[in-house]
Image 1: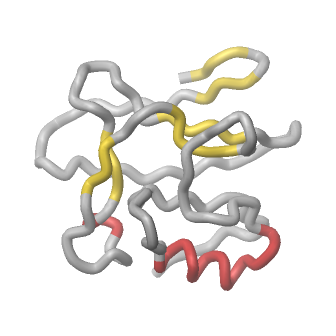
Image 2: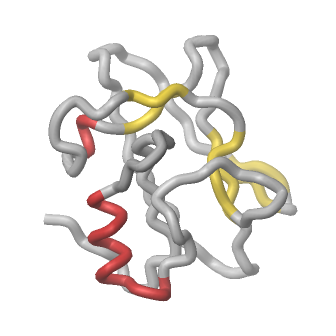
Length: 124
């Protein structure tokens, strides 16, 4: 069962940047939430001209079956230690809940940490 939080602002599906692709999970959420969703596409690179997106380089894990299955799609950082997958979202001042999901595809025990950077600093 998927639960869509009330007042959801962003739903980012790190699927692929391939030309002509779509994200069925993003489309379902967009149809449910409507204009309240701030991102008009499922994923994008952060540029000076937009308010959110992936910063830097990441490799895409190709879809291996049903693209609606979260275990079959996604992206990963370059294989060098410390190469993070980073997103930037420009949000108005306020309180927010951030929910993320992560999976290790290769069955390894790889540490992960989440950090949040604001004008007040970074919290890990």
